[in-house]
Amino acid sequence: MIENISIYELLTLSTILFFIGLYGFLTRKNLITMLMAIELLLNTSVINFVVINKYLYPNMLQGVYFSIFIIAVAAAETALAISIIINLYRLKTSVDIAETETMKY
Image 1 (cartoon, one colour):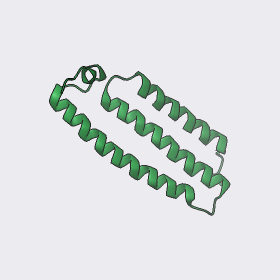
Image 2 (tube, one colour):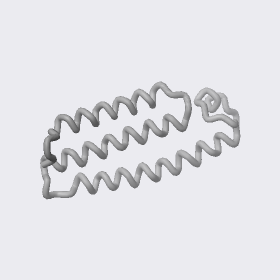
Image 3 (tube, one colour):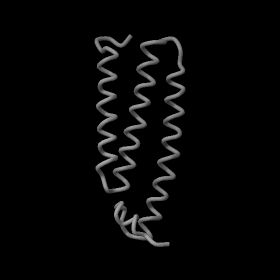
């Protein structure tokens, strides 16, 4: 399939990226960096779909279709999250989690 790269190496890379995204989501206090970590988590799932599809079923495109669907959902999620973050910034002039938890409406 892919010359000189095994499925184990690609899945290991995807796993490392997943845990980097998980660590970033759990440790960051800024909403923008948390959003970037969620995007990294979604992109690792896209990598997994494409890699597994390429190695198990090279003539079929279901993994690619799922990947395009995930990318479209991630784009919509990002647009919605950015609009929420912008509104929070206008209210509190900060995008830290600690500031948004104490917000009164």
